[in-house]
Length: 192
Image 1 (cartoon, rainbow, N blue to C red):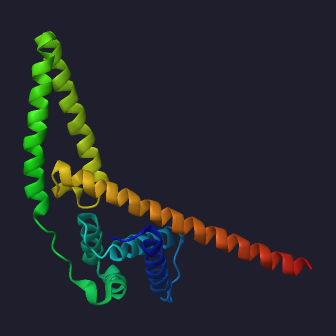
Image 2: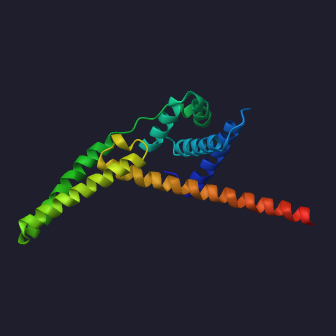
Image 3: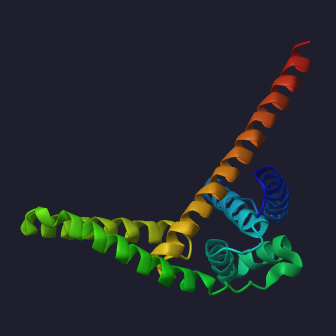
């Protein structure tokens, strides 16, 4: 597992390399094309910085490889790591064990609540299940590769993806701050 600072350094290094590759073409890009290239570079840089050990990073890389134009960027950022690493099946074993635990906890809590009116309990359970299903659907759409995950691995992947997005934002903020400081220094030199 990466520490935050090493992940930031690795992301920044790969992101800058990706931006250089995207900008090296002689083709002039409009604002939307530039935006897409910056996002693609950031996504692939983060996915490759995580050493494709997560499902979301594998999903981002395989999605980018589908587009022939983006394959050049992916291959140059991944280098020799270009082959996707298969995910271990330990999540399935753990999730089955956790399901059994959750069922036991649910059974105990239901037995404790038998004092409640059964109709109220049934309605509350149905509403809770609907809410969980709806939110799980949304989460599956937000996390790359989330459509093929079970609920337990989806939560784990979503947390890891959120932390990676936070690293991206932190690095991008640092780059903007550095650019602002440099432009202020140049402006001050021009004034003097």
